[in-house]
Amino acid sequence: MQLSWTSRSHPGCVRHNNEDHLLCMGEQGLWLLADGMGGHEAGEVAAQLACQIVSQTLREGKAAKAAFELAHHMILEQSQGQQSAMGSTLICMQQLNKEQFQISWVGDSRAYRWRSNKLEQLSRDHSYVQSLIDAGQITVEQAREHPEKNIITQCLGAIEYDAIEVESLNSFWLPGDIILLCSDGLNDELHDKQIADILANDKGLQQQLLDLEKAALDAGGKDNISMIAISCDQASGYKNEKAEQERRPNQSEIANSLDFESNREKTISPIAALAFLLVFLILVSSLWFW
Image (cartoon, rainbow, N blue to C red):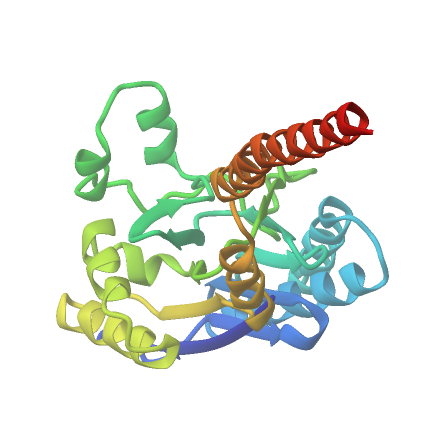
């Protein structure tokens, strides 16, 4: 199995600064995306701290929950004495082994999986409108137009939380899979179907992200737009294994071969019996005349 990845980040059409931060450490199996919040430059600082602290802590072998909690407290310390509080969402993908990966998150930055021409949201937003959806009070479509859709219920550095709720899920790769990590600047502008339509055009990861970015900007680009795409390429060993399986005879071929051998033995046995009878008659005749 081979992985390839790329990323993009754009400030959007409204904001002058970009408070998102990306960290791609593919050789070490780590990809992180943070969406910062706060006053002037505070969001950028929080997002950068979140990515740096979590990536370092995970590389030390600690669990995602511990890494996120450490980042939460470090951002809280950093914000002391600042004129305004700062915080950040964070979504992280960590490669566990050749087949498995783990996605962990706090906030409403998302992880999608593109598999077999189908888009699936893997993460679940920590947001007010998501709680309304879970309670059955509004639909997903109504949530997109809700006046409080930007209220998140969890983030790193939020002073009202002594502890944060870190969610994680483990999954596995299949050849052709794409994992898309994104800030809400993408999915606030584009419906899932629009994202799926662009990923369906297999132009390569870089062009797909360019097309997603352009579509979000054309739709308004009211927030920073950031994305990381990780693709599971089909390894050559997979093809060889499949070809090897095609070369092997199947059960019906083996059965037909055995039937052929059995039939051949059946055709030989009457000839052998006739020869034995002739030899017997010759011996009897010889004894009679003798």
